[in-house]
Each structure stands twice: as C-alpha cells, then as structure tokens.
Image 1: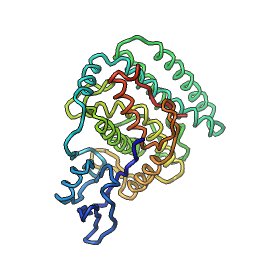
Image 2: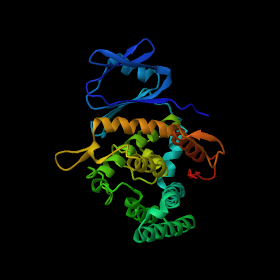
Image 3: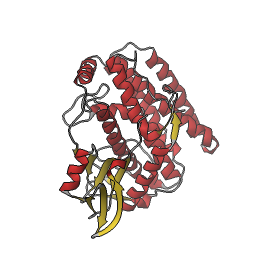
Image 4: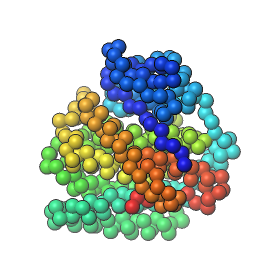
Amino acid sequence: MKKLLNTLYVATEGAGLRKEGENLVVEIEGVEKGRVPLHMLGSVVVFGGIFVSPALMQACATHGITLVLLDRAGRFQARIDGPLSGNVLLRRAQYKASDQPEDIVKSLLLGKIANQRSVLMRAWRDHGGDYTPEQAAALEAAIRRMAHLLRKLDASTDNTDTLRGLEGEAAALYFGVFDSLIRPPDAALRFRGRSRRPPLDPVNALLSFLYTLLTHDCRSAAESVGLDPAVGFLHRDRPGRPSLALDLMEELRPVLADRLALSLINRRQVRASDFQTRDGGAVSLSDDARKTVLAAWQDRKKEERRHPFLEETAPLGLVPHLQAQLLARHLRGDLDAYPPWFWK
C-alpha cells in the first residue's frame, strides 16, 4: 500500500523556506524553526507571503514534491510540479469515459449522498436528545428522504444532468439541517446556507478552507496514478478547474471536511472570534485559527478506517489515493465499475 507522506503547511507571514542538504528548512526572521527530510514530504502548501528559494523549488520538482501557493484566505494561486508521469493509454481511456460518464457519476453520487446521510445519522445517534421537536422532525425527514434518493439513484438509468438534479436535492436536504448539527449557541456561528465565492460567514469560511485542502489532496492523488486532474465526470470541464479532483472529493468531504468542521466548532477549538470580515463581506480564518485547523486536519488524516471494497485498514489521508487507483483500474477495464468509498 502507498505510504502516507507528509504535507507541510506554512502559514506564518514572512517565513522562508530553503534547501539544506536533503532537508527543507523553515526560517522566521533568519532563525531556523524546523527542518524536514525531503524524502518524507509529499507536498508543501504555503499561505501568502512566504519566501521559497529557487534551490528548494528545483529540489521539490526533482523529488516529486508538489508546491502549492495559496493566498492568505486559502484561495488557490499556483501549483509547481515536476515532470508529469502518466500512462497515455490511461488518459485516453479517461477522456473517452468522460463523454459518457453516467456510470461513474452514479458511483460518485452514491458515495457522496450515503456519506452525507451517515453524517446526519451519526449526529442523530449521538445528540438526538438535544434537539428541539422541530429540529428532530427536520433531521428525521432529511434522513428518510436521502434514503429514498439513494434507492432512486441506484436504480437510475438517467443521463448525467438528471443525476446532478438528484445530487442537488440531496445537498439541499443536507445543508438544510446542517445548522442543527452545530451545538454552541453563539449566533455568529449559525449556518444559514452555503456561500462560496466568497464565504460570507464563519461556518462557510471554515468549510471552504477545508475543501481547499481536500481538493489539493485529491488532485495530487489523481496525478499520482497518471490521471488528468482537469478532466472529470460529475463536474463539467472548465479552463483552470481541476474537475477530476473535485469529483474525487465529493464522496470524501462529508467525512473528512464537514465532520471535522463540526468537531472544531462543537469542541470550541474554533470560535467566532477566530474569523475576520474583509472588505466586500468575505469572511476568513485568522492566522492562529488557520494553524489550529491545519493541525486538526493533519490529525484527521492519520485516523484509520477499513476500506469497504479493498477490505484493508488505511489512514483517511490515503483514501483519495486509493480511490484514484480504483478509478484508474476501472478505466483500464480491470473493474466493472468504480467502487465508491462508504463511511461506516
């Protein structure tokens, strides 16, 4: 099984990264704060004004270490990779399948909606007695309706647009009761619906930040098995969009991102004071809160779960790579269908 390599996140404004021997060295105001052997790194993600030496860039490219540049709010800016390795026959199969993607789209959505429903069911099981009658009724109704949508999706022979419609209904149900999963009474941490570009409240800011991290991992996973991250099945092709990475993250974000966001808020590790509102109404995490979230993200990726298809135990951080491998096997004809990852 693939080894789970580390991702180094650097979020301190003005920090510098350089190469020394076979190590990456982190400095702040000329003082060394840490070093990591290059062979232990899979990627480096930097936020805002971080200096990266040319020698380190070259070493990252040589060692297959992806360097990702994000702005202070966590929005993607650039990505530096070494030479691409990929099987041209696999990519041709991927491009061909993208013309008739219904079977793959169905599998992706079965995983996504089932995992969203599992998040709601876990909340009901753990905290059902804390809900008001109105919240309990809405949560039960959403769980029942999503079970119906899963049965309808499993039996469907419809086109991709119709399948996307089922996804849209499931998302409306899921996010329609998401606020009831947030237990602290702080009015500033209420969830009133998804807002993306930009996020307009703290919960959306936290979700968007975690989705950015997950997209990076899914893109790296796709590239690691030789797939083209820009050509997806559920998400339409668009210049500059990593459509396949967005596809892969759909079934994973309820568990890896949404549940982590809820845990951080419900355990009071992240509070309303950890967010700041910028000109135009965009809300983002403070620098200290970002570090808290990054540490929790790394810990979350180390948690192990049994893969329902492979019947092996693996860290959650490896799941994007395992799913990318299974997708590649399906595209090559080794598997009759793409097996989604179900959280249990």
